[in-house]
Image 1: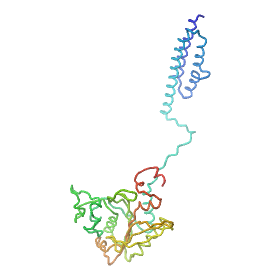
Image 2: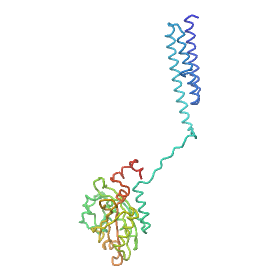
Image 3: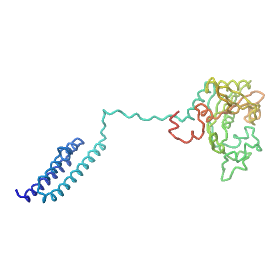
Image 4: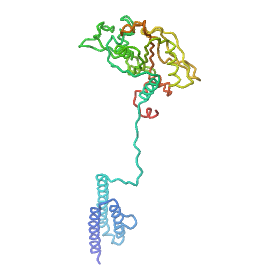
Length: 350
């Protein structure tokens, strides 16, 4: 056989190899079939393309260039066909939604309540065991419930516009932060004591409730302050309620929520809505400083009169605690901002 005849025969075999390989990849309907075709045609050791490459050595030097060019084109076409077939069958598996039931399952990640919600729920449960019902009220309040009924006079610095979020009413701003005496101005409540007033207005004594929810004050945000935070306030009004009852409730609360190793103390203080008033501090054994947890005291007679109660017939106590502060002390959190950033890496710890 002449060299030209040998080249023609070799090129014809390459064309036949290309046609058969393309047909094999096109007809492959599964990953296994594609792999089988790949091994037959493109296998590194015994593939038909590898055998065609070896034939190059049997040709005359003058014929090798033409054969080599055709061989490279055939090999490229078959590799492209293999890739296309593999992509096609993989997309088909995804479209069908095939599930390999022999593979281990993927456990779904379960969420949980925010640590502040957990703390609030614990407080509701704990004070419920003490006989306190739960009361809630609006976060947008009128000045009467936020200040007037709580014995906070118009001249009191707590009503300063720099210390409150006053809202425009009817297109007009609240007057000077002091609030309208007719209750026309509104504000974001600065304390949940407003709920206590609403409860007493709606029912006669005896009263035993906790008011829980968000409050707002324009404080500069830092590690211990925020312009929005949560409070729980307790109120008990009945015949013969004394400061001793208040101290007993708060001591029982501290031991039940924070543990038996906590010590509680009361310091004389002043609040317009309680008389006498105290600050409540707590000390954990092994700690080196007292931490203020909130204020408390006996309900001022003027507050009782404002809601229609007779201070000669009933007395009461009230206390207020910061939920963030309790949560931070309970879990050893040193920055209040961590509770509001919604960083799941932090929240997963609770």
